Image 1 (cartoon, rainbow, N blue to C red):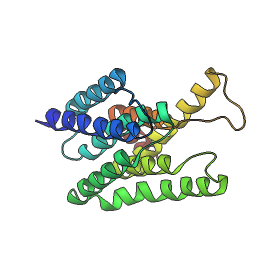
Image 2 (image 1 turned 90 degrees about the horizontal axis):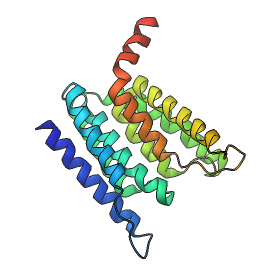
Image 3 (image 1 turned 120 degrees about the vertical axis):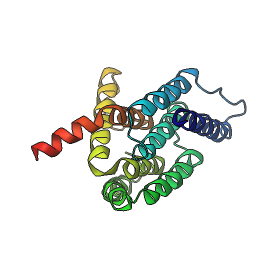
Length: 201
């Protein structure tokens, strides 16, 4: 049943991303088969490894980021059509589970820090779409897991930029795919890391 729920969310958010991206093009690009396969794989693995119902919000957020990443990689936009419904659903889930405080502890520092970065850089470093996607992730994962996800996303972004030879001042970085990578890593491997960090602190 859980796999069906998550698979249905994959279908929905990919359709929403496709509709939003289609608004930018005279001939809509097809949904990426690879990205869709990743979305279904994440749904299947999450259903097997996560603790229900606590893991539902992180799984929903991760699937949403995979769908948003596909559009970001092609168009440079993380569309509200994906991030806003995802944010609403994540906030409903954390409220129902009594995890509002944990969600706020994750989302508020991320929103403040990266919001300030956007303001000070006038949108040259990150955009509002990135900020909304980060909010979804941080609210779903909470403070420690979202920090792990952002670290992995940042390392992924830096590594990819260096390997591609585009590591220079003013180079554009579409952060959506890296946020998705950080969320996938944390969804599947973040709990052991978080427990190890908690024991060591």
